[in-house]
Structure formats: C-alpha cells, structure tokens
Length: 172
Image (cartoon, rainbow, N blue to C red; front, side, top):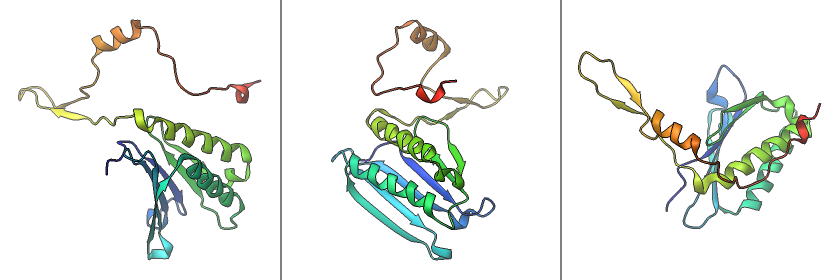
C-alpha cells in the first residue's frame, strides 16, 4: 500500500518532564483507497497498547477527532498539554485546560481538517548535507529552491488557493 508522505501527529502529554507516559495519535492517508489510517498508542501506565483503525473516510475521521477533543474537555484527569504536529505548519501546543473552551476544540478540528485536505498535495523535503572542499565547512543544502528561483517565483502571479478562509475571529 502507498501512504502519504505527510502525516498528522497528536501528542497527548501527561507529564511535561516524562514523555514515556504520553499517548500519541498518528494519521496518514492511504493513497490507493483515499481513506485515512489512524494509529493510537496508549502508554497504559507502562504497558503500551496500540490500536490501528483503517479505512476511515474523511467524515469518520473528523467525527473521531470531534469526540477526542470533547472527551478531553470532560476528562477529570485530562492531559496536561496537547501538541499537534501538522504538515507544512508549525507545531501547536496548548494546555489541556483549553479544551473546555469550544473555540479551541473547533480550531483544532478546523486545523486538522485543513491538513487532511492537503495530504494529496504535500511532499516532504529533507535536508541534504553537501561536501565542500576541505577548506569549506559543511553546509545544509535544501535542493528545492535557490535564491534565483525564489525571486522568479515571487514575480509570478499567485495561484488560487483551494479551500476557505475567514477572518471573523480577528475582529477588534
């Protein structure tokens, strides 16, 4: 089976100083079927249990995430922090207490939904180390854009962006 280069990781943090007790959810897209696959690892007090759910269509995935975030709001012994690692975005980490506020639950759900839509279009690029003559230090080379190509692409008109954007949250 072929899976997306990109993935979504939800890191559920019990203790900021000891990551051995943290739970993780890993989401990828099956490129052959178009469905998503979720792997949940519950540290289970030192006896890890891993569950894998396949063939999750998009609506089922968002329903799962809705329940996950709502349960976080109701849990008496909730996670201290929740971290989202999303493709092509900076990591987000918030206090587990934030999930009591529907704004944060909805924002995380919208953010992950946006990433699910991008899975077909994302390619992960990694740094390559390029050897220089012995007098020159090693430098990372990204190999996907040079300053000249960046300037040229900035002169091109921007492409239309798929999806929706709303700024109602930012009114003064």
